[in-house]
Length: 179
Image (cartoon, rainbow, N blue to C red; front, top):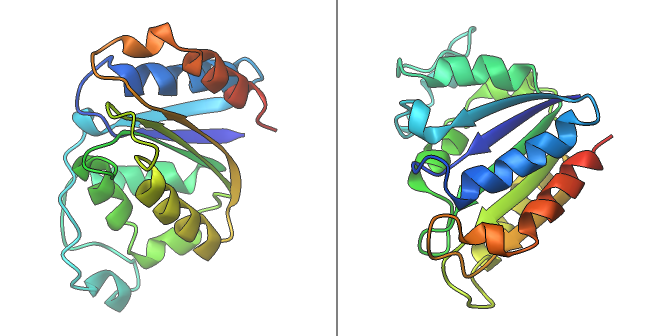
């Protein structure tokens, strides 16, 4: 299986990256191909809602940035993994920009059939992930994508805090369970 992981943290090697890497390591141990895109490595502008991508045969976005390459990588993916820190009860703005740019008919050419969600938050509030989970479930439901699971990690205030939990083992096991 070709698995595309979108990591939404602009901070390199932080808790979100570590969680995504643990998932990737588990999945690659079972022979899956892993492709990871970090928001810190790409320049993607927000969707302008102009709908010009719907008006042209090639489904081209009028914005010329790194999203064209991300579309190509999404076309190859069988599974999508969203990994993000939580900022005010939501995924990062950089990751949201990538997701919003999938408001393009090119998304109908994607063969993604599974998705997983990996979220990390500093807060320990029990409702921390509610909004992001609701959005995730609505999106995968709309596109008839199977939920392969999610890992939600609270209380990660400092870089590296995730090492003091069992979340990395859980992420590895989730990746390893992909079939």
